[in-house]
Image 1 (cartoon, rainbow, N blue to C red):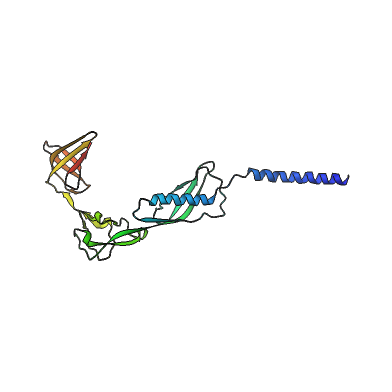
Image 2: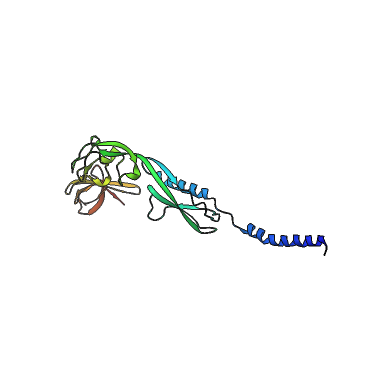
Length: 237
């Protein structure tokens, strides 16, 4: 066999060896851009934190660089069960098509906000006003749940327990003042699609603003309405 024949055989064998490797490389699916997942998670958390009082700062950890995820048509960010949108948390990103995968990314959300603290020792049952509180700045994530952020939230409320000076005030510490007392004459305002009717009644139960209160009309009918700030009962049909 000539030298040229040997060279041709070697060339042919090399080509045959390379073809499966080339075919495998061409068959490999495109990989998911991991930076895109991090950006998607950040955008999701910013949207969730937009309703919180204050200025949010969102940080999301980078996915593990060793991840080899197939490209997703429409990855979706979501909040895992038990996770929250404040403080240290985690955010999930998942794919449903054309493949199924799921990753969790570490995250943190801080919200700088103004909040109310007691400006002096306050007594149980004390009716609160703007002179009883002061504004402080802090991270909402480190403050009690339901912390008050606006002096207007004190209107018509009293303390359920004594409070020392400098304590953050939360909704659970307050009690609403009754706007309707049992036996009180009240105005019923019945509203429905295209109509509004007002009549007189007498309260059978009492309640604060927003509470359901029962009342008896002049005709003897017992109705339930929602107590309003002015003492009226709103009945909707």
